[in-house]
Length: 181
Image 1 (tube, rainbow, N blue to C red):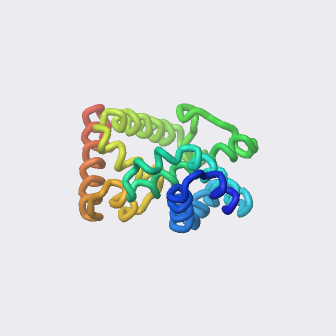
Image 2 (image 1 turned 30 degrees about the horizontal axis):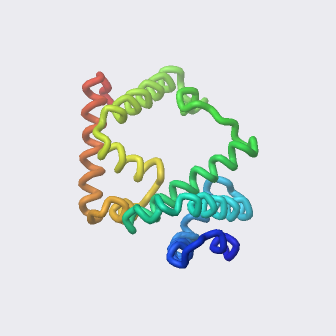
Image 3 (image 1 turned 60 degrees about the horizontal axis):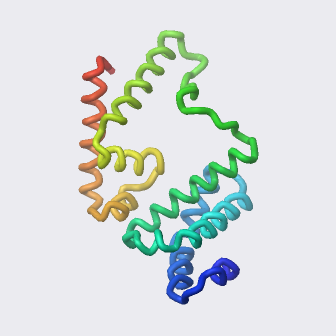
């Protein structure tokens, strides 16, 4: 970490990165570990993320304080996925080709599940950006309600309301498209 701090010109930048490191290191490492499943690789992903953040220090300074942790968690997840992709452990597959089927399920059940997934993806893209954002935080970034509240600058109760409305909007759009489930 000391080497990273020496890359910065100003004392205020060094203090900002040091503080962000202290506050977010463990959560970032745990997020990387969930993806990479190796301690050393997870630590490398966190270090890589901070190196990239140093290069984008101006972006970090412009972010509201509550959004910096979300930014760092997102960045470390991307760094971890890049490491995983480069290692060849999991080949890159477009989302359209991902099979979410259970081989023990009947053909009818598999087709129904595929149609459901497609319907939900289509509905998601039709949502307003604010509803997409709260659903991304919850289900793609796997943030807790309190973390989402910090990122959005609202209360946890408000996050729960946003999530409920977004889920209802997805369901309504799915029903418009003929989904009966």
